[in-house]
Amino acid sequence: MAAPQLAGYSYTHFAVTSPRAFVAHVEINRADKLNVFSRPMWLEFGRVFRQLSGDAEVRAVVLSGAGERAFTAGLDVRAAADEGPLAPGGADGHGGGDAARAAKALRGHIDEFQGCIAEMERCEKPVICVLHGISLGLAIDIACCADVRVCSSDTRFAVKEVDIGLAADVGTLARLPKIVGSTSWVKDVCLSARDFSASEALGVGFVSQVHEGKAAALEAGLAMAGGLAGKSPVPKAERTYVFELRLEQGHHVFLDDDALLVEVFDDVVVVVAVDVDDDGLDGRVALDEDA
Image: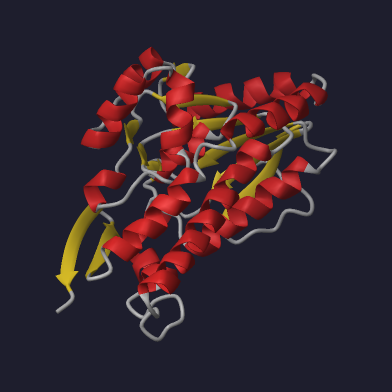
């Protein structure tokens, strides 16, 4: 029997249900596209967790991805290439203006993106992230914002950004070293963009539990959330405040770096496209030199 929708939570890209007392289950709801994120989705993601943070009827949250194939395959870079400062027309729709204006627009775009994803970290309720299947790029950024991470044994992880000419600037580079405690391993996976398995993720401490299949992982996450929901919500609120102070200097540094890159490489337009079809993920990168 399906869990009832949580009252007051009506969203386009996320299903928010109440499977147990005082527990909210947030499900990324774009399974036909491997749950990839577009700008409307990350804006909505931020709103979901802001609402949950202030909801006295919620004491613990579980985040998962709909469908059997993917938690999320990351950023919908085809959509990103068609909208905002990365679009051919630029942020203003008329060529993007000069390099300085393009850099300012990109900085604001990334700041907005970072802020929306970080709403999960700022949520004053413990958040358990349940990963399965394809979990690439933005999946790692999001998972790093959770309090606890569990996964299925078939989970395929990767910090994929370098393969499509991007930096993992939404939070992975700031948070992942603190989570696993090994800059060597983090640089290994970030610079190579190689896949790593559920067992490797468990070994380095990125996840705390591995279960056979998505259903078992989700049930474990919900059971954990049920236990946490019976405890005082005050410690999580205090923990959030302390950790935010420590991260203050972390991911924001990438805003200035990314803005600078726009100015340095103003004569190169990078167009990135990801095709998602029934057979899986097909990524392509093309560089169009501006004459």
